[in-house]
Image (tube, rainbow, N blue to C red; front, side):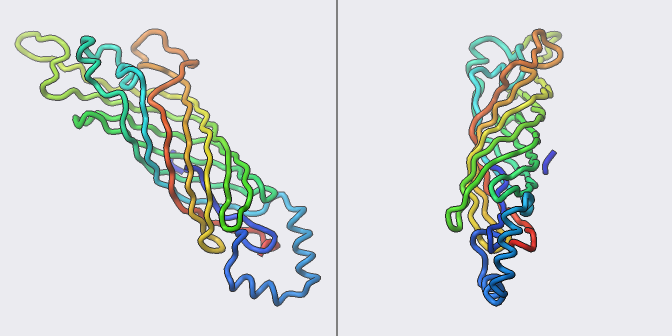
Length: 256
């Protein structure tokens, strides 16, 4: 599911693969006849597909919920005092990537996917989320910087592992044995993921991408073993993530 803060890439302008192209490309263009240059501009203006970019990103974020039972998708964690001592938030990190087409020099359309892990309690407990979907954003050019705003739609799953500490006797004793209420559930979801970002040109076909998003997942709130499983539920944990990565691309020859 790993494929993309949203892919940033290199985009083509009327003369460079980015609005900022290197000196070699610039010199080559200046040597072309004016007529050819005007012809290329005309072709570029009428072209729908103006290139493609792809790359990888790392990310980090802060996720939270209002109830540890939702965090672990487990309604039997123990008595209220114990449940209140469990975490309801934490830092997540992960990796992913994206592939995008450039349309009309103003729109990115493509796909992305990520995996993110939220470690908890220091006992091996964790929330591991994998997701992917179709992205679309609009952008403009400010010199070497390209701001963008967009959304990703898709699906994924959360794998929730709860491992109590050695001193957490959260259940009951039978025949002198202590039972710990460990659990593992996998909960699928659909999501909407709005984002904003900046793409900074480094070279003619390379760009640095910085993006912030806030995923809105909807799906099974709890394990298949529990009641009231509804696909209309808003899932947790969720929160903002920051993505940093590099995009690499190729553009129509009319653009360079």
